[in-house]
Image (cartoon, rainbow, N blue to C red; front, side):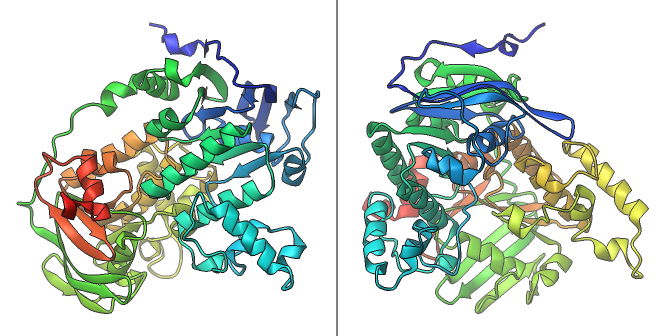
Length: 518
């Protein structure tokens, strides 16, 4: 039977203002693959227009065309109704009033916050004029992150603060059309609310906002209109108020996924399994304070908390990426001295880090070589690579885990976030890992791929692996985890063994410290 979602769903949307941007019939291809197939998109003054779709749907390509990173093969771009323009590069786009806040910040670590905000303006580097630019930077940051010092070197900032600086830099350049690409992926709820407040201020001042996010509740909270891309084509352009969330999920994924996402999941609560990982008094000066924690085989233990609570620092210590200053790590009941990641790997511990592209993958290498990174001992026991065996193992995992494209020779940078995550997990499964440390496992992953990653994690637990999972998304913690620990200020402040009555609100109160006032 023909899926009714195959037809484009367009509704008349009351325009909040004059047309700022109009793209007509945009076509873009790469090596014979059509990324965009005649896409139409427009943006008005005082509008927040959400752009949604699975990874690989064409969102990023459309944004790159819009912001001068890549030229379209055909189609037209009009700004302010003044006719066709050819955007040569991002600098030209900025001159036309178009700015982009990228998911991965592109800042200079050696410069301070104020200098990065005004990067490109040589006067900002002048000692004489530095105070004036610092004052301007404080003014821009005030509604978003007033506590962030403009004299702090960017290299010392965390991911959430880097995102904030990137946003401030775009605002400082006076853009009238601003694209936000997954801007809240590393922000705390308070920082997210500050960003939303700022975006609404920009909207009220007449600016046009393009908002890309995989987080459906955010889109409903912030946007006026939604355009959905699938396979390089527009399948819907609707007022946000007219779209039901389940309908939106199905438009994005092109299948009846909403029913699966809402399927009740009964936690296994398999604490009767053998102890896999135990921490006693694990500490790191200024970061972690006497952490006691146990994870059993077959269990998914969630770590909730705000950004900066110490969760990432904890899993890095377990994996040996950072050195602990005190305490003991036990694996399968035996103490383990982890001096470096190779010690953790030898004990069957795997880390899937938050920033997979920088910390777990080599983007310019293909899937097969990335798969083999943790397994050279298997494939080169005598110094010579067993290429045939590595290729066979790679292809087996590609098939078992439905990695797409299903070719071992594809460069990993050309894979979607969900498929990149599968490559990392496959690598660790081949290494024999039985304890998995997941740090934000679905960050930047679309709704369909998120479901697949969740199912994979449940399968690992069912097969007897122990999973320690960090997530800033409270619904993810509630849906996945058998037990939950909450961290705050480098301490494990609460462990919830019975999650049957646990709610997002209660988790947030534990994380923020408000639970003491209940």
